[in-house]
Image (cartoon, rainbow, N blue to C red; front, side, top):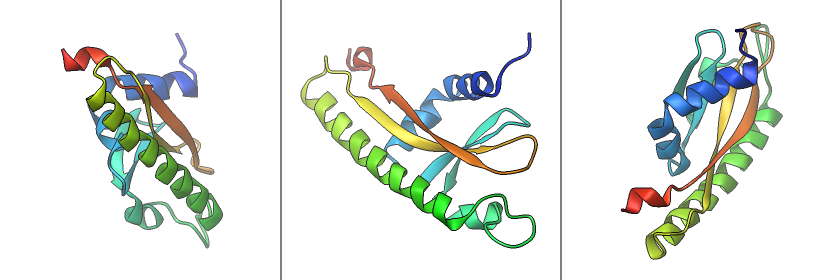
Length: 126
């Protein structure tokens, strides 16, 4: 069976739930998915321009894209912090959390990013 790019990302996220959940409430890091290897890792935002060139020869994305991704991370981080507060007050609640994931495509052309969301599992409070 041939897996699509989305399926590969979903599998990596599912296999790394703890990393995903931890990243929801980590303000200065994002998830990075390598399509070529199928690996998911957490990377500090400050390291992104060093690891993935933003200008000049070999650049695979730009500063505007980084800015939009950081803006999305900030909003999702705030959502996640509030979700955890709600969950602590009401253990039966399952509010949503979120983060962003930079996708390092196997074709090595350009990078893209997406939002990753999940609900707090109320069963964890039992």
